Length: 121
Image (tube, rainbow, N blue to C red; front, side):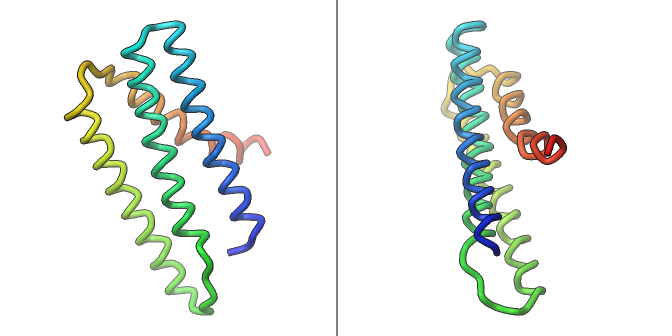
């Protein structure tokens, strides 16, 4: 993969981490601590999963076989989905009380950041 794509992915994931913290902080001021940490967990779950995917997809790759590259991409996406499932399951098991709306709301917002940026630019 090209270095510009790798750099863009890195900045995007950092932006997702920052947005997660900002959403959590905003909810702390507006709604309270349960919504704040629930949103932080949801946002960080999305950011960690996207960071994992970016690290797998943009790792150095020199083979000329497009089929292997596609399999690598699909494998990384499947591992990302498993990571999301494990992190969300852990949140439901270990975090009490939990605001499900804040958790999934922040998760969705963080996942939409790349689409919004792509549409804007």
